[in-house]
Length: 116
Image: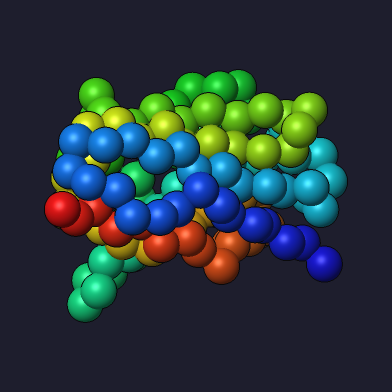
């Protein structure tokens, strides 16, 4: 049973930072999977935040470019999302995703709230 566990969410003031973690310890050969972070705000569709290929190439949504950085550690079987200069519009549930071909797994999500 594949299980992804997100952590690191919470309440932060505008301009603050958070670092999200995704533990993918149950995924075999994690280094062969693309990994991603998505988010879903209340009343909105889930949207891509950032992805990272098995080779380490990253892609970001325009709304987070220059503020968020995604990384991965294949030895620890984990992915991270460093979020700086947070804005109220970044408030959402953030989900971790791993995908390889027909294999597509999601975590349960972690809440990020940006508010003063």
